[in-house]
Length: 424
Image 1 (cartoon, one colour):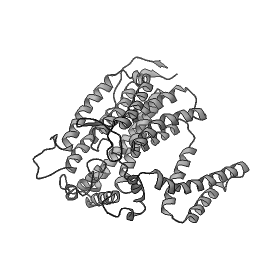
Image 2 (tube, rainbow, N blue to C red):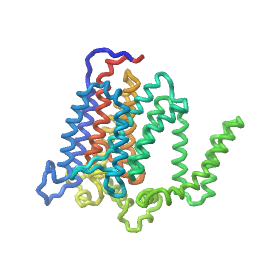
Image 3 (cartoon, rainbow, N blue to C red):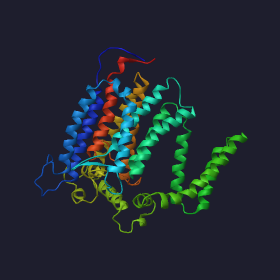
């Protein structure tokens, strides 16, 4: 790969979107924790908005550091960075204190940091390094596919052992990156098929009906198939599907932890939460809060349900409900447009890269942010279990904000120098 000297320019459209989202998040965090009887202001370090401003301020220094580092170092040091964060995931298992059923945080006094958040960008760098090192080869070889899945799966497994299923799921988004780089779409179709099958198994208690649905789906696929070998493959898929259906009960009752089981079952059976104060209560109240905002919302600091602590964890995972109540349908639509603009911009930037490493990493950034966004919004409006997925740049939390910032600005650094690289 040849490198050319030349000027470089940062993408100010993406940078502007980043800071607009930070501003919206900071103001919304203040609204979610606002107490009219308190003398604390939005800048007070004693409340979440003040602490979030501190994280935002320190992220500025992180951005400066990223932009000052030679852009070639991110590719050169990809594997050491990845290994370092794998070690941190191992250490947290032994030295972290269990919080809410999870060992995920290093604690130094009142300061807490979550290695799992930073492992996302490290895994993205390692994945981009490996795929780009294959040169012109594609991902059709089983060996290359296995290595890619190992790079993705190893940190996911360690995070799952910590008890943080939500963060572990995020790594599944990197399959989209493999698809962009030439992986067959069949694994994506099979994954979607298994998800549908899993949901059907939960919704339909009659096993015979589930089996009939499987047969109808496979027959529909096989109508256009004439070769006997392909029909045999469909038969194998049918048998494996039955095995998967029978395993759902085992997964729910013997693999998932009690709080995880409740989160999944609450989507299909509200009676699974007899106290009325569990995850279904949280999601239901979030939906009510969003709906109460109407078309234009109640106005800044005028959200009666938000001020009444109607939604637990509203400044973190459920920050979207604050925006829904105070700014209504217009406000939430505007926020969605901001995110969609960011996602389309990231795809544009990824596609204009001159190096394969930068392009792959760009798609990593898009996949992780889009996955977080989709799951968080789905969770808040009751379409997905509550799994602790923050909304990028908006939810309260230092680790998530720093990790998203690092993830994004490494790519912006690579993009700024794209004209200094010519592909082989």
